[in-house]
Image (cartoon, rainbow, N blue to C red; front, top):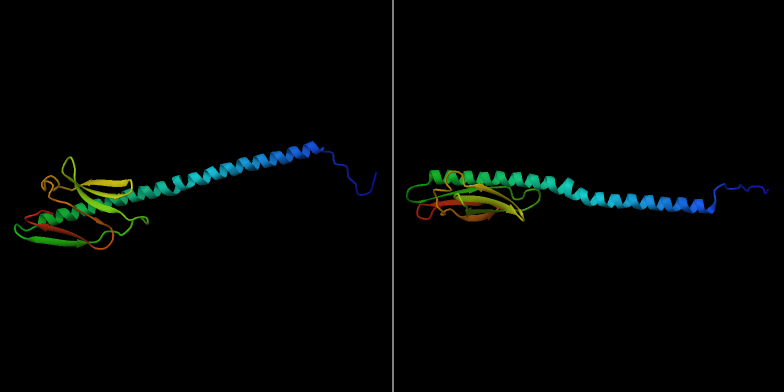
Length: 153
């Protein structure tokens, strides 16, 4: 026996098997990590943000509808009334679009961004305006609602 020489009980095949096992387990773990990272963005970040945006869109639609009802109830028999109001410029870093459209039961306020939208009935006046209310805006800047006794909201 030589000095400094220690006989290894494991064979060369055993060492290669351990290396292959290590590489395979590491590969499977990395694959699972990549799948998890792809799912985290959708499930943990985008879905809650979309829920917040939808609730905010509903609140904005209700606010615009309420302001339109206020203008309609204060409207003079002959003349014009105008009101300026401000809504948030962005919701969760996203700009949005507000539109008054004719619906099946009257008129609706639609607040939308891409495929995410909220449709709110134009409070108590949607059926009485008979399509006379209309227009659109975005969240940026100051917004105006105007009523003209000859042309509606």
